[in-house]
Image (cartoon, rainbow, N blue to C red; front, side, top):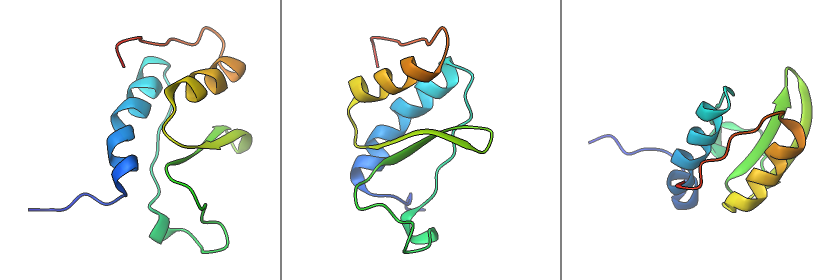
Length: 85
């Protein structure tokens, strides 16, 4: 059996963020903390970066769906949020 990488909160929240991304035609990528340079590794996980091409629009941490929804609303025109998530 192959063990999926990532901490518990990251594994739990991944389907939610993937659903947000899919519904809004956004790309979603994961990076494991152990694959990041230690000087760039955040202290809190999951940690998110909302980018437009190579421009960082906003970054945040945690599994609060309301926070994520507010970030997306600020930056994505016609943002779609599914209340069932």
